[in-house]
Amino acid sequence: MKLLVNIARILVGSLFIFSGLVKAIDPLGLAYKMQEFFEVWSDSGYLPGVMNWLHHYATGFSIFMITLEVVLGVALLVGWQRRLTTWLLFLLTLFFTFLTSYVLFSGKIRACGCFGDCIPLTPIQTFTKDVILTVLIIILLIGQKHIKPWFSGWFSNLKVAAATIVVLWLQFYVLKHLPVKDCLPYKVGNNILELRQMPKDAVQDKYSYSFIYEKDGQQKSFDVSALPDSSWKFIERKQVLIEKGHNNVPLINDFSFTTTSGTDTTESILGQQGQYYLLFVKDVPGDKELKATQAFLDKRDKQKPLYIITSQPKEINTIFNHNPATVLPVFSCDGTAIKTAARTNPALFLMNGAVIAGKWSWADLPE
Image 1 (cartoon, rainbow, N blue to C red):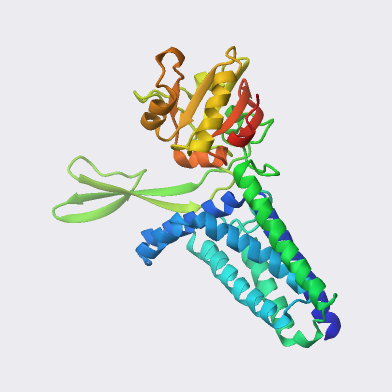
Image 2: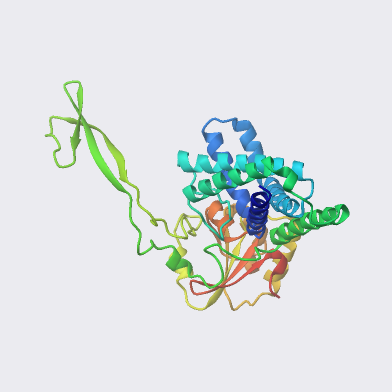
């Protein structure tokens, strides 16, 4: 039993540390995934008031959950507060299992984001992982007496405190700057226009269609190959999914730039030759962010065109184009797309044609 407990201890502790650190390099990714859960539950009528409140504080909850994962993993490995640690791990894993089972069986959310964007897993993979993890933690609960501290009491406390400080510092650092490792489709070197296209090996969903017609007060369903004559009145068309496709969504989806008049300019902007800037400003930035961005705009290489991409074109145009002598073109883009492309507000892309040549947070804008 002792050997089994120690094997489970190493596996569980290492997995929690790894899982937490993978998400800690981009805590906004988990926050956006949490918001997706809150939106789905709110739309389904599950405590909409509470869900909307949680949606507003998703970033704080993301930081807390990531920190808790890493700290519990370290605590288990060093043997700190074994009873408290194992019970918290058990409760946390039950919560994760509930989330992954909801993703798997409801079909309302594509993935749970358990390992962030760097290690995407299918719903069945994440659910299976959590079931196995639950079994391992039950072994730890049963064999708690075999979880011996690896260090003295004060040194274990120091290890847990250091883990807490490090993982918190890492998250606040990337929230101000950019993820330490970029696992998103908008990483440096990627061609945006190419990733907006459907994958070559895409398999589309297959549907069957039936058409409902009415005659003499009676409705009847007809196949597309055997539609009735003009004496029947068309009522509706029904669509039934008969085979789910796969790999049929472009890596970059719903990403387009439009003018105030509604003209789509995505291809013309991204299809140009040479270097230019895309300045992503999702919404009105704070004073510190605005000051740093304005300093860059004043000193930037004016030979390179610059386009502002935002989900609030009217407000952003007022902020950056108050001086008629330096009017910058402002284009509208979906807010969700901007959140995926730019993890800080604002964020700057240096483009070379459709290829991303450089990325900077507002705190690291090039001189």
